[in-house]
Length: 203
Image 1: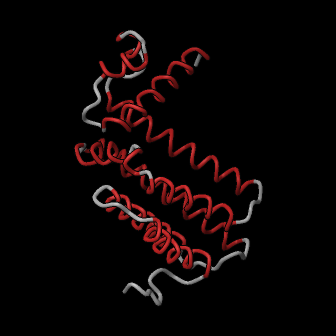
Image 2 (image 1 turned 120 degrees about the vertical axis):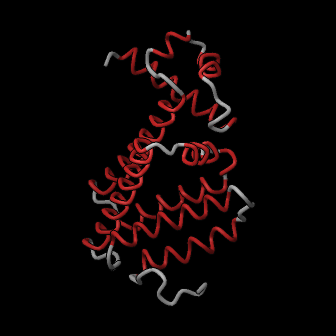
């Protein structure tokens, strides 16, 4: 792909991301994007046919970017705890700013897309995230930095844990104290070698 085309795609994605954060998913139109990007309608449709297409591309790009960062750290032999704490701190930062993130738009998108192809797309996104987290946990096991049984199961539980906090965060204000308490419990499982829910103080 020509450099100019790559740059134009990146412009569209970055400007549309800002729109989705400000307005949510459903309120953003292709006309809004044309105005925001200061390009012609034909120029926009050359790259994307709908806001759905752009949103899917944003989800894919974000997942790839995140995985590339942490895969690179594993490839460089960085400590497991350093990598996992960086991942978790990023999740906490997103939760603290959830009303100024793309999360509202994401849930609007998830809840309104029911076709088989969309469900398959979203399922694949989840599977990729779970596989990445499982690899990271297994990396810690192999380096003897932790002893977490069943990395696949724990990876899925971590995703469910984070998803629950996101849904809650869109409904109520999450205090720093509450977030620290919740993450501390899961960090003990990830770093202490105990399976999730063992001696759970909240059960």
